[in-house]
Amino acid sequence: MQNTATPVITIDGPGGVGKGTVAHLLSKRLNWHLLDSGSIYRVVAFAAEKAAISVDDSDNLLSLINALKATFSTDDEGIMHVFLNKEDITARIREPHIGQAASQLSVHPAIRTALLDCQRQFRKPKGLVADGRDMGTVVFPDAQLKIFLDASPEARAIRRHRQLLAQAINVTLKDVFAQIIERDERDRTRAVAPLKAAKDAIIIDTTTLSVDEVFAQVVLQWDLCQHK
Ligand code: DC
Image 1 (cartoon, rainbow, N blue to C red):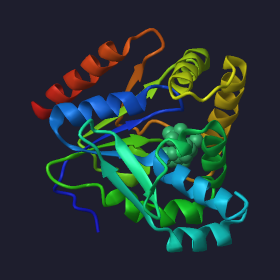
Image 2 (spheres, rainbow, N blue to C red):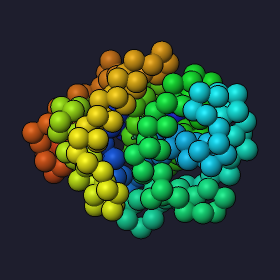
Image 3 (cartoon, helix red, strand yellow):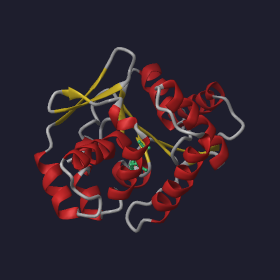
């Protein structure tokens, strides 16, 4: 059961669009909870790799999810930390190959269903900012405000590349670009809960905008939404 009395703002969009940064800033501004739903798919990918389970083996992935001892906590900075069997794997799940594996296993409808409850449990007073691919379309269809961020693949590759280098993950821009294109294609064309804007989402093209400009637009939309 969803706690539908608690407001939710969803921020969906493709990889590297900056939705994590904007969601984080917004959750801090409002003092609301934060759900980085991609990290849940990444934990499964990380655990599957450890257990040598293929991203195509949905039966064994489901058993893995049922036995998974993952916990999430948000630090004072508002960053969501992920623990697997009490080990902090926040940095490890950011590795590009884990992102690819998360995208691959997320195509299985049964896996998406199995992860629904876990995501909805983040909806707690006084509110939730949730970022991902299907937050506004599937996980929180009754969200008060739905934002869909988009940007050209080139701009997203440059942003993601910078982010990875800052985390001391050494990859070339060319490889990051290729991965963005591959992941986009898979995330947008999967049969269940594909990456797309909800009908009632506000779409913001961030290609030429700074983080501050995107954030200002999102805050404005929330102010407008409250005065409707
Ligand atoms: O946002 P991210 O890069 O951490 O997400 C990793 C992958 O997880 C993404 O390529 C597809 C999957 N994912 C999803 O299917 N649905 C979500 N709501 C979030 C992520």
